[in-house]
Length: 463
Image 1 (cartoon, rainbow, N blue to C red):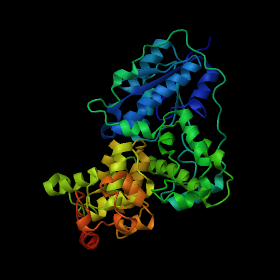
Image 2 (image 1 turned 90 degrees about the vertical axis):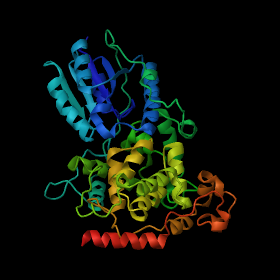
Image 3 (image 1 turned 45 degrees about the vertical axis):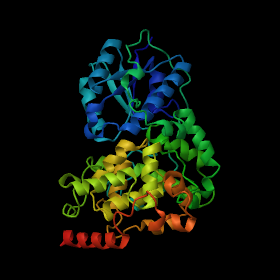
Image 4 (image 1 turned 90 degrees about the horizontal axis):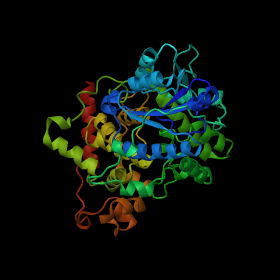
């Protein structure tokens, strides 16, 4: 029998279109391994929403492997030492892994090469994106920093690679390494169990991802118009499945490509945006934690330097700003671990421009709450809205929450997540009169006042 092949799973929790698994299955018996390594990521260890999703995704992957007479080995601790130990114990000749671009995983990949036994090699594959970072470059061979030319260059290189099938056979090793029990990891909340609404809102796993794609394929033609309407929620809801690698953008692209209309063209560009975000963090590993542009440090009100500013941050986090569209989004985030994309922009803009609180505080909150919390996407999106990014919206473009709410017909969305306003008419619910707010809070700050304050603070910071 050939030497065992270890497959190191991370954010690629699937069997189909899984290049690392496919190559390993062709080379010999397969030992699938997932290591929960909280230390490597530091401040970006998985938050509560991500840990909930991870538990159920690993559970689903384990069942899928079980149906193929295989299993997944679960370990907790330092990924490098765990994998090197399993390689030594099993006599594996290779560790196969799909490349990841978070800085801690890139460092781990380099360290693992040195830690493995001499007769075991690390084999890295490309499998999580439409095209690996570095594939699409400028005429001078440099990576793009700006999305629009990056997107145009990618479109010129399409189609992406073909999707791989599941391996025909996954042979088991003669003996299995010891494995943790998933339940012992404590990924699910218990005291209290705050995940009831999340569980009702999502199905997790590879089969669920393809079911979601099936549903979206029926409405993608209307995506251009409906994606901005939170009450209708015409979004794909594929983001957590894509983040955890339960489905790949290549699979999505091949399923939907060729559809007519602006819906598919718009969604295709959003798939490309995911690749763009990885290209950014490949160039600037600290991008989700540090502003790209200088000159903004004096702009922000720091919640760590005053209790009133901290209270402002907490009101935003709890969905108690007095702006119904903002509060609906923040409560949706807390309840189901996800927020409608249009509302994400409105809520994020409110934090950095109405409240003048630095975007990093929003990034941290989203990271902890989102089931699709992605290091690249989260950082790139926050720096885009704050004006601090390599490619970003101008800070002086300040979204008006009340106007946005009415323009995109968010009345029913607000009724769902801000039920204390549910009885108000469509005309009133976006900006409730003071006498009809009841227990709902008054605005933290008026829009005109907030806009003038933000523009003045921006001017002072630049001067």
